[in-house]
Image (cartoon, rainbow, N blue to C red; front, side, top):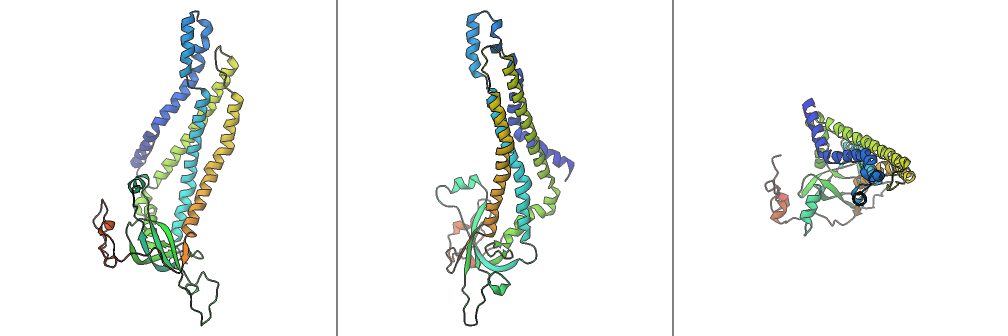
Length: 334
C-alpha cells in the first residue's frame, strides 16, 4: 500500500472523529480551569449582587463527574470496536476461507432472494446494506462420505431430506441449480459457492492485499482513542481531588470515592465483559448461524418460483438481470 494512501486514510479517520476530539479536549481544558472559576472565590468579592449573579451562573458549569462518565462511556465503545476489528473480523475471514479448503462437500441447490417488501422495505435498506436469501439444498447423505451414521438396508429407501436456511447473499436475485458448499461434519453449513468466492475476494484479491493496511490504521486510531479517554478520565479524577482538598467556598463537593469506584468497575469489569464477552457472544451467534442454523425437512417451502414479476429483477443501479422465467436467466457481464 503506498504511503500516501495510508496517510490519506488516517487523515480521513481523524477528521471523522475530530468533533468528539474537540469536545473531550474542551472537557480537559474546562477541568483544568475549574479551580480558577470566580464562583470558587466569592470571598474575594464584596458586592452581594455580583456574588448572587455568579452563584446563579454556576448552574451552567458542567460537573466533573459528568465529564468523567462521558470519558468512560467513550472508552467502553472504542474498546468494543477495537476487539471487534482485531478478533471478530479475523475469525470471520478464516471461517469463510474454510469453504475453499479440502474436504468441503459440494451439492446442488437453489437460492430464493428475500426481497424486502412492505412499508418498511426502504427503511430497512437504508439501515443496512446486506441482502438475504433462502438457500435450499439436499441434506447430505452417507453416500457423500458424510453425515449420517445410520446404515441403510438394501430395501430401505433413503428419505429425501432438504435443508432450508437463511444466508447473506451478494447476488440479489433468484438462482437455480447452483453449487452449494458444505463444511465437513456440518450439514447445515451450506453456503452458495458464488457468494463465498465474492466474500473471500473482498480481502484476498490483489487490490484488497494492497489496501490491507487500512485496517491497521483503524486499529491505531481506536487504540489512540482508548488511551486518550483513559488519560482524560484520570485527569478528571485528579481535578476532582484538587477541588475537594482545597474546599472552595460555595463549591459543590464531588464524590471522589464514588468516582474512583466507578472508574475501576468500568476499567476492570464492565469493559472486559462488553468488549471481550460481547464480541465472543456475537461470534458464537454468527458462527452458529453460518454453520448450524436451518430447517431439515422433506417438503420445500422456500422454492424458487417458476413465474415471477418483472419488477423483482430490476435494480436501481443495474440492468434487468433475469427474464420472466427463472429457467431463462440472463447473465450479467460482470
